[in-house]
Image 1 (cartoon, rainbow, N blue to C red):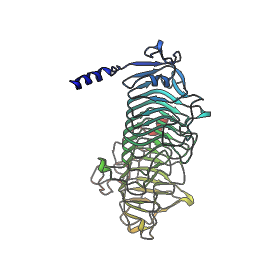
Image 2: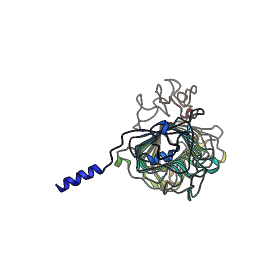
Image 3: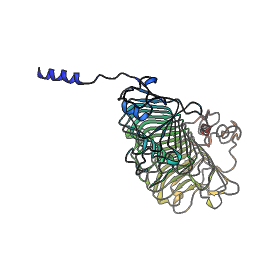
Image 4: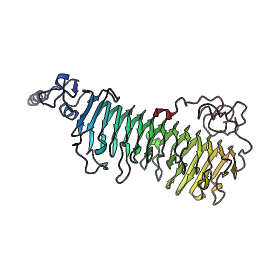
Length: 502
């Protein structure tokens, strides 16, 4: 009986659950405890004040038109949705750090949320939509949105701009979706190292898509992450002044898909030693990079085991880079590089630095090499047989500039004994092993949109059709066609990612 009375007292002491409500913040409002914010006539003036007053739950804050200056961090509770008027020229809502907003003592620290405009700590089911989020150009604060240990977060139609360290920082979180947003000049300052306009750590089962990530100030990376699991980064336009377009280095990575992006700088994903096998987490790859439009000559920085790089259009616009690089460490692969169209290769297609690189499979690429002057190297830039093992190169088309023939690979220090080649077409190439083709051009269509149908076989009579060998990839006909495309193939290039910047 005593326990029953105690239970009744406990139940009656708990406040009733607040039902889902709509709250209002606009310029006619006042931050007054006598107001409840549930009507436009009783609205509050600042978002920080509203976030303090509203309890956790399935609630909505509607922000009015115009600029809302905040003097302190906006600490948002679980479940609360914040929706503004948009980010157009006439109809917009902008949440901006005031000139009195406290600055972080260490703007380049990853340890805490100090100096961020929005703070989300251990929250779930939050949504932020139709806002401009900023700080003054002449007094940029540390960052825009900070999330830690949160889940089921939706960020949509935001313009996050003018921050020192990171526009959006997300760590130890899962089921996050960031879409249809612009992140601009949001990592303008370097301290000990460069950060990213978007920065993630230990992000799981999330999507970052259809965003514009742009910098003209500072050398911040477009997207900087690490410790991913089941994350897809797709249909983004990434154009940065310096640094990398995407970097995710040194951590174990499981099931990271990077596709249908435009990127003007390197995708950097190196790990000195082999990362954990993604199959232990239910994935076939650590990184799968496909159907992107990439313009940097230093295209992919490795090594990374269980990497697949395929069906990308690499139109190189800068000099002094290699398309795929192995920078040190012992990496046993596998790495698959196949069905890519690559134009204007500068120094080398694949380049091996220090360490050990094993099990690299290069199939069905169509690759054109520029006259790179004294920067040029071999097509496969490996210079010591002790540093590589089981490189297999088949069914590719390699065409060098008529003014500058190149060697296929070195015939010294045992390199030629570690590379298996067959059924490649090599034009203006030196040192071609037996079993490859050298006699004539590939007869490609060379009209229409690039990369498809420009680089498909010219007709069903093109001699490259069915000149390959079966390497385990899908193909039509009796055996594969040489190069990236086959005759009558329906390519998925219905959207060139470069168009996302318009």
